[in-house]
Length: 482
Image (tube, rainbow, N blue to C red; front, side, top):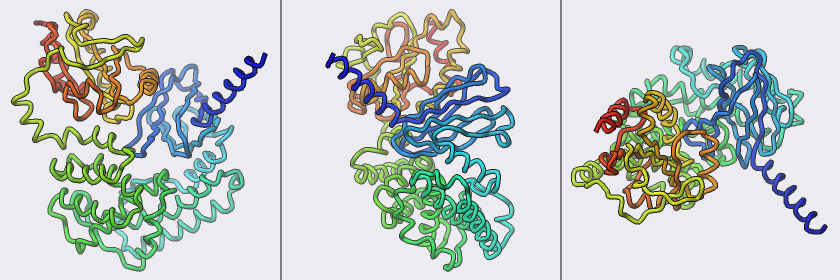
């Protein structure tokens, strides 16, 4: 009897923990055909988030988003979208009519107060809180008139929040975000005026703001680590660093991107709190590394690696920029590289725990995809991989293996991601992250990375093209004919 009670207690505890590390969202969308709804959670807040699809059947869907703290997570159905705010333990229900989300969206359940407020804020103030704004008004108006208009809107928004009937139901975290959203949105628009006047980023120059308007961009705003999940704050960090880098350059145009990125890193290291500096530098590299020289990208990546001792951002940046950073050395290696033979010491484990080798697929063409669950660029290629398979005939598919080799750190994360993504193919796992035996043996220094193997088991292309590139289909069919 005691053992039975113990099992029940353990099950209850496990279920409780499960709920605390995730938010559940269910929805009813009138008039929507069967298909998928998409969420874009971003664990490290870098980039646009990882697209995560959930089935929509008979106008209903159910989703589970893993998270350990409050986060803003975009939701999308077709051309309609809404940025949700989710906290661990939320049980949110949403309803709207397809094609009429803006006028029919409503929320109920745990977490509804936060999202109903955001919906009403959007209805009341339109696009005032959009993080991207290229309105002609900002370009045509003088800065004093722009600031007057922005300040008036800021006061109306603050009053809207102060008098909102749901404010008492806000969690402490969301209450803080709601106030900071207004403040940083105001500063963002001032900084955006400065960039638009300089035709930035087409030209690497911006316009100086009156000092009285930059006083609020104080040191305190550079230490606000708690505000990092807020999209308006992350946009503010990006724009204000551009501003102060320009200030340190006397608002002269930078000669090229590498010179500006070097100054941005230097300014951000001196102004931002360490966690914010790490986020900023990682995001700068992910979004801009290919515009810089490989040498500069490598140098800044070294700075990030030195600062980010926990490795929170290092792998994401390596996945996005590794190929670019390694360009010169990789070109030299490819010239002298001989295709690897399948006689090395590496480990591949399939979904059933059975060891696998590339030689097991002899007689078929194998398209290998090295990836990991945390790799955004890897996931971006998955829809193209699906299209690639759909283009091949049934006869061709019988002779082709799409082999996905994960270098995730642990097996549970890999299996959960495979199930969540729903990507068809042969899935195997090489444990150890970047130190995985398969990554070492096949010289994988960045992901996504692809290989093509012919029917005889020879690796004919150690660095094959991506699924999104038309040449990939051509090369696969060429090998099929041999």
